[in-house]
Amino acid sequence: MSTPGNRDSAAVLQMPNRLATARVSEAQAHENASAEATSGDDALQPRADGEVFAYVPVDRVRVSPYQTRAIAAETELEELVRSIEQKGVIQPVLVRPLNDEPTSAFRFELIAGERRLKAARAAGLAFIPALVQPLADREAAELSVIENTQRENLNPIEEALAYQQLTVSFGLTQTEVARATGKNRATVSNSLRLLQLSPDLIELLRSGVLTAGHGRALLTIDEPKVAERFGRRAAEQGLSVRALEHLIARWRDAKSDAAEEDVDEEAERLELQLQRQTAKISDCLGVEHVELRYDSAGNRRLNLVFETEASFKRFMAKIRS
Image (cartoon, rainbow, N blue to C red; front, side):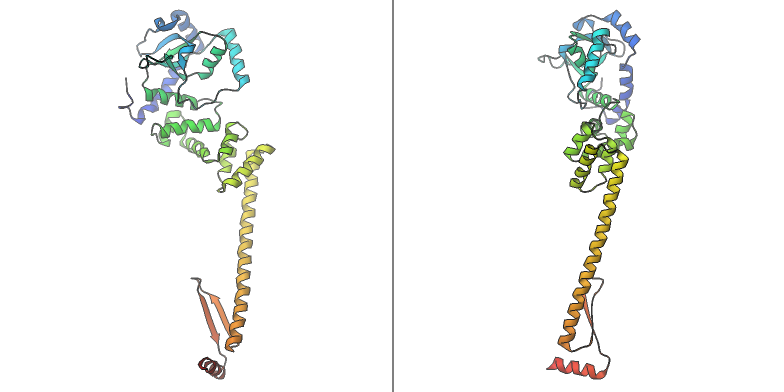
């Protein structure tokens, strides 16, 4: 069995296949349950690949610390509880044994199936069908995170946090994360960028008020306070992504127009200032034509124009005196 020390990041690319084999069909689950179901450790009879089907005590299973997915909505969980009360748990959860923690109250760590486990507890079940796999810490953590990213109802922030765990905790590149989760690289990259939003906007995405599309539109605004104002407006008015993008485009155009107006006003102010300074120099020096300008480096240049030799001599005489 591989250990955290000798596995490299490429190994995680095989995780989806492990998940696929763990998700047995309903018919197979019933067949296994009838043939092997008992209670406690006596049910653990390893197969050739090391995987075991067993009924494990629900109060001896702990949730993975790498779980990024929030608990399902109350109504959604209640529906699953009613289904379990009527038909039982159809699909086994995936767990690993905690053999190296003899003092712990828990004997198993959940890898996949948190909703089923919580619903089974709520339904009053003492045992739950499970596939038990002997996994090393890193392999279990990677598998748990990847399993979360494959949920259809994962909100944008939960998905982004799952990708972030794979990049930060396990050192995977975005390309490796994409291969491991069956996504394309752009999807992973765009998802991770959502975590750059302000905490208030992240919460709007987490709660489902705004979508990932809204988040990507807000990321085009380089002023956080402005982005928050647009995000709150989209949430309060129920704006679609297209409507939000239109508003942002209008704001950007107005901002550009205002900047151009500011430039024009500044140029006009400088021109009036030069005219006043030129008139003052002309009066002081007794020169009719004075040109005062700024060069490309921002330096002032003074040009004195004398139309006749006599006017130049009068100027020089005034300077000498």
